[in-house]
Length: 217
Image (cartoon, rainbow, N blue to C red; front, side):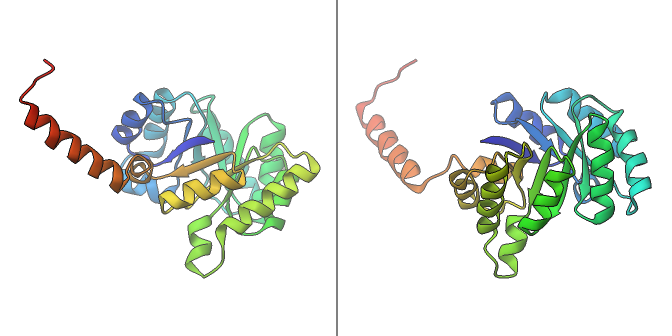
């Protein structure tokens, strides 16, 4: 499974990237706002930092304007994936931009039918939002499973990018059912290394080592 980090914070991306934990980055208008940076400036910096896809989202709502914004964003760097909403206009823009050879990430997917449309429109990535479905008492992981089955049935190349990841369990479950990629905030990715039994075992090792009175260096 590929790991994308869902942030526009350069320091957080750099830390994870140095560990080989970053296969790409996803951003959105909310994350750009949180960063306090100019969208072109910060997106360019991220693209220079990582080699994988960097999703940059349009803010227009009609297809023609989405296409224009998508082309502008794609000029920032070769590894830009233009992020488009899963609306009818978004699908129109996806078709045009993907045929121009640009990577496209179709976001805000909440149904298998939407994912099917995105694949047929040539999307590079489809981003089903797991956490937001869970918020309304629907099983977000079932959606990942359904999309996986449909894409495998018909040989679609569109990659399933599990988004709205809220917990380490979401990561495990998404990997288990076959998501190609997951995107999560830096703090969730770091929590993947944590386990109470690891902490307990380390505490015991340190206590026993102290009793030996030894030093390695």
